[in-house]
Length: 140
Image: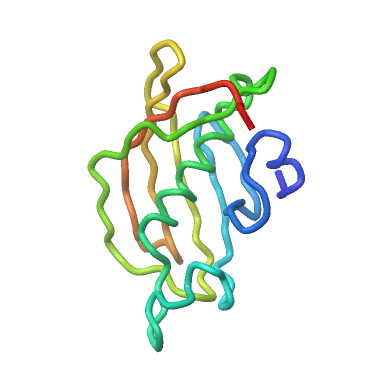
């Protein structure tokens, strides 16, 4: 699915939509985000040696995972992060990198969904995390 198809599921727009494409295979979301050298989050992080902030990598994992929740996000509902656990940053992600995700939903309880995911560049593990979401009413 391309960005226009992703926008039908996720509420993110403009600079906060951090997926170029995503596919789902056997319950795993495979996302791709190409890190552009002029990305807003690289300005000042860090001058002369830019790397993608960890919080942005966590957001990319979340957006990839939420594509798996498309059936839950009808009638004005949207996902909200409720937790991050066991986040491990293994290797920096830099401008020009093709960041790839593999994310899964591990369980659910009511409006809460729990997942895990990893992010890679050229097969190298860069981040691994567990997280949770609540499906809420979109009050925007």
